Image (cartoon, rainbow, N blue to C red; front, side, top):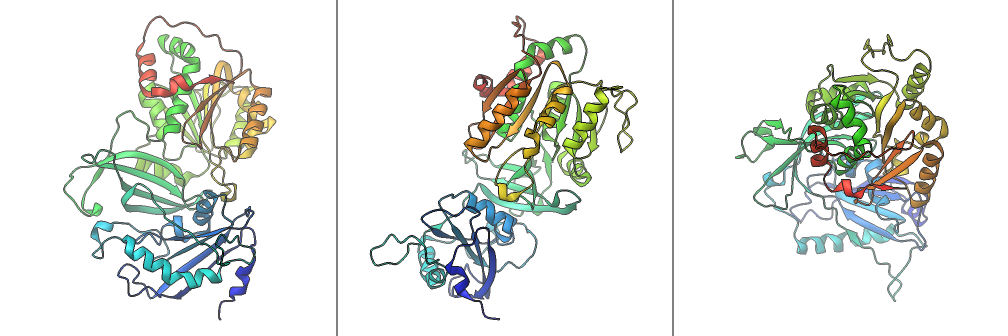
Length: 467
């Protein structure tokens, strides 16, 4: 059936259409598929005046969820709020799932500037047909300008390790990647965890290193996890820095031989849990909604369940409600989780609650945590699980400035004090809220714990501000 191009003459919010066309670029060595895949997405919130843009899918990455799914396409267009429509054009993928990417093995080189000009010229007749009637025209002759956006990231090559499906999070991808380094003499490698529902968001990444640097294909070499006491995600470092708000309280506990207790809502690959346990001596209880994610964390990211790390499968808010009810009655003595784990080592209160959960709706864009966490009953349940001198530390990616102000207002109604760290990446903020006013006792000695906390927190220690 022939494609009706008249459908594209109007903007329909969130409409997503894909189709294929005979490849007009076969004379170019890079675009060698017999057909091109075209994906057209209209923004959930179209701009005024209407503007559209096109983007070429990077050669070799056509099957990546970034470019082959509606969720990835959506996250791309949300990065350009001025756009009403974004058109992706690329070779028809030869796989329905992400595959390993290694341009070093390609014989056709990279797409040059001259080739790009030819590509844009050959695709322009198609793109003109995709211009809505209400599009904003900048040129005097009435023709619309259609800019070509270029996708760039730091990935040099990637190796898909595994794909699996979780009952709660859906499709999961585990991959090793080599990243561009500012120091040309140093090669950087990461292991990453991504979900198809939010493909552009790296859920977890850790440092890895090859046992042999002399290789071209990543499949030829074995990688090992680097445990150097450094968190790769800057916002995780900021969350750890938030512990300094109660550093004298934590230091006193450790000095008395008592391990601080942390409740982590959201496990992912387990980077934060492992860090709190191995680097700072915490006893950690992690809650994760999907058991498959926990298995991935154990198998690929080195998360080990043991006396210092307990894991629980359950929806975070549901478990918080159950824990709060338990805390107000009999405490955790004798309390058994679904997986048979006993919580006898935890009393009914935690020294810190870490919240690192992203919103599950891609149409909300990059946002965290789910909005339900900002409701009064959720915040009160969290406060119930905090001891007098404890804090909740939450990674927040606000959808806009107005919503962030509302979040702060909700926190201030429930908690005694509220602190903030601006991570500095234009996305993440870390909120630190205490159940009671914090007595800042001067620390005259530098214990092992305090030295370590200062070392791992870096510049974020100076970024903490009282709201």
